[in-house]
Structures are given as structure tokens and as C-alpha cells.
Length: 47
Image (tube, rainbow, N blue to C red; front, side, top):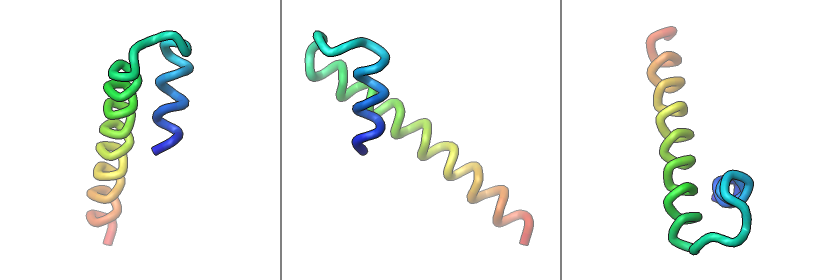
């Protein structure tokens, strides 16, 4: 996800090791995935 890479660059700048950007991007993707799962559970309880 490109947006997660943008967040990584915004957080630490552009002079870091590529691995750090990968770690941050994965963390951000995990946050969004968790939020989507929460929403999915909430929506399934409404029905």
C-alpha cells in the first residue's frame, strides 16, 4: 500500500534504511487491517 510508505517517510524522513520503511509500512497496514476488522464485526452485529 503506497499510503503506508508515505506515512513511513513522513515519520522518519528520507534518509533511513529501506528495512525501516518496510517495518513502518507493515505496522501501518496492520493498524488499518485491525480497524477494518473491528468495523466488520460491528457491522455484522447490527444486522
